Structure formats: C-alpha cells, structure tokens
Amino acid sequence: MRFAEVNLFGVYVAPISVMMVAAWIVTIGLRRIAMLSGLLRHVWHPALFVFAAYMITLSSIVLVAGH
Image (cartoon, rainbow, N blue to C red; front, side, top):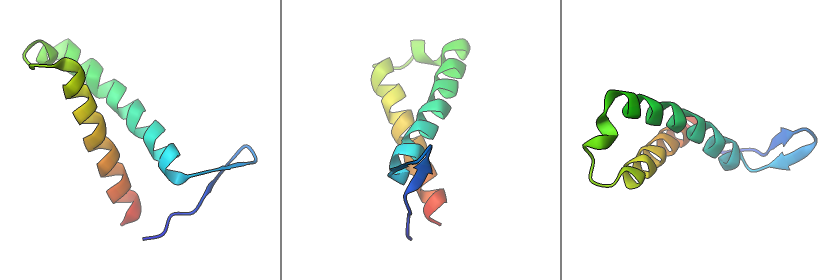
C-alpha cells in the first residue's frame, strides 16, 4: 500500500487530505438523508453520530484506495 502526493493546482498535498474532503462531502449527504428520514431525532447524541459516520466513511475510502 503506497500513497503518493496529489498535485492540486501546483501544490503537492497529502492524499489523506483529499480523502478527508471526499469523506466530508459524502457525510454531508448522509447527514441530510438521516435528517429527512428522522433518524437524527432517535439517536442519543446527533453530533457524535455524525462524527462516527464521518469516521466510518473516511476509513472505508482509505481502505478502498489502499487496496
């Protein structure tokens, strides 16, 4: 498993930063779905639930990219 730097408009950035942005965009969509379906009303701590969903999404993206 080897990750290389990403050239972003002439600036080299770590690949994890690109993956973090992608995971955040996916999490925003998941949060909206959870809000519209009423799921966030039934969880104990909505911010903690969204953070856990973000971490799961980020971990999944890293595992898929590393495979």
